Image (cartoon, rainbow, N blue to C red; front, side, top):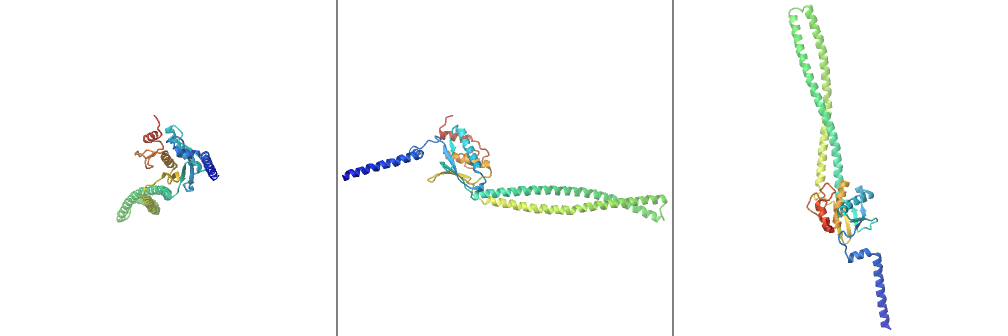
Length: 316
């Protein structure tokens, strides 16, 4: 009897175990299948979803999903098949994270300094133009004044010479006296004109000095700003690791740490999705899968396409 009960309990235990396995198989079938029979590269679309998105990146969820779709589409067009699929609510195989640290902070600091430098440089250029015009105007007016003054002094000397001559003669005849009187009156008018020219010339000097002070102050500020910019830029001794694809015991994820434009973010996303597919780096600096984000295009290079076709076993 005991033997019978023992066998019965064993049978019930086996049935229970089979039931658990059956339940897990029906509720978690894709994961079990993948463990038992790992899919070939590019065989099924890789699902991805958003996980940790730091708001300090100033990228909305809608924008980020759109950029991810564009990045996935770059690889899918080259392969002519669905390679990725976006799934919501953190259910994707690959989790997408935007993690804010010193890298993005430094990038924002440099952007702010660039803006200040550009704004101050524009102001400096405007004041410098005003200053150059003032100097040019002062030089022209000074030249005209000096020419008029020289003419006045020459005419005045001739007039005084004529007056002395006739005084020695005991007086000038009526017609000579009248001529000398006209010259005297003309010299008085010319002297008044020269005085006005001199006053106008002197009035430019305070404006020129004030403009010089503005230029010098702004030039010092620009030099200081540029110095701060260089200090901030050189404070990062290592190359920025803008993003990375990680696959470990905690799962698969793409971490993005730094970008200065949405175009750069798109390029980083394309690169990291390439790693998610299983692609390695190549040696073309303009390629998407180069180790640095140094290119200027979001199009795949010949090396990128060749690696993708080899990975996915695509025929030409």
